[in-house]
Image (cartoon, rainbow, N blue to C red; front, top):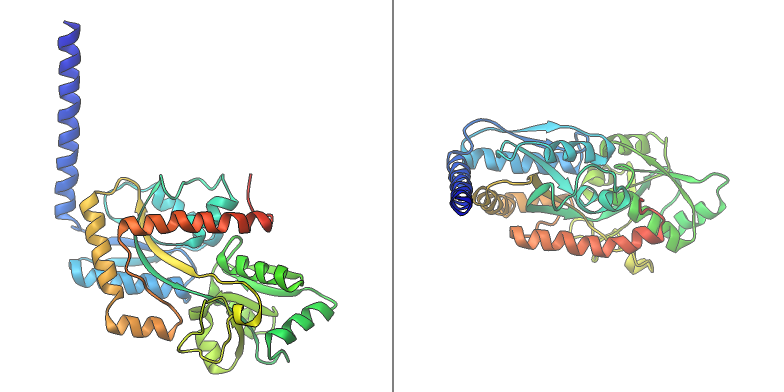
Length: 327
C-alpha cells in the first residue's frame, strides 16, 4: 500500500508539474494580453530614461501592446529592482537594470533584499557608456592636470555628483581620485539630471556621469569634459581624452540591461531577448546611441548572465580596495 501511495504521489506530482508547465507555456503564447510596465530605475531625463523608452517603443510596435514607462528613482534604482524581484513572473513587470543593480549594489550591500542571479531573470543587454568627468565651463579648469592641481591646492574638497551611492559614477570617480592622489567629496543624487543642473548652477565642482547624461551640456559649452572612462576615444567626442591615455588606469562602462522577476517562461525570455537585440541594432537607434556615447552589444541570455558573473569578479577586488564591500 505504501508503495502504491508513493507511486501515486510521484505520478500526481509529475502531472501537476506538467500542468504548470503547460499553463506557463500557454500564458507565454498569449502574452502580452494587456499593457506591460517597464520601470526606469533612475530619474527622468538621464541615460536610463532614454534607454527605457527606446526599448519600450520598439516592443510596443512589435507586440502590438503598450509597454509603458514608469519612473521610480531612489537608492540608485535598487528600490525599483527589488520591486520587480518581488513581482509575479507573468511577463507584465520589467525594469531597466544596470551594473549598479546587478553587480555593485549587491557587493556593497548584502542586505539589499534581492540576489541578482536568483531573484531576477536577466533578459537582454541594452547598451553601455563610459563615465565622463565634467566641470562647469566657468570653473577655470581646462585639463585633467589642472583639475588635479586644483584638488590638491583647494582649501575645501571638490564636490561631485553621481547617480547615487554605490553607482559606477561614484566608483570611477573614487578610483581615479585614489590613483591621482587627491581627495574628493561625493554628493549622491537620485539620477543624473539634477546633478548636472547643480553643476551648471555652480553648486558642485564636477560630475561623474555617463556621457549621454552630459552630452548636450558639453556640446552646448556650459560643461567642459576633461576625460572619460572608455577604452578608446569616442567618435562623437574626439577631443575628450580617456583616463588611460592620460596615465590613469581607469577603464569602465556603465551598462544597462532589461530584467524581470525570476521564473519567467523560457520562451518568453528568449522572445524578448531577440526583439530587444533587434531593436537596439536598428540603424536609427545605433546613430542615436553613438550620438550619446553609448554602445550596444548583441548578447544572448546566456552571454548576458556570464557577463554579469565576469563583471562581479572584476569589480569585487576594486570595491574591497576602496573599502566599499558591505558586511
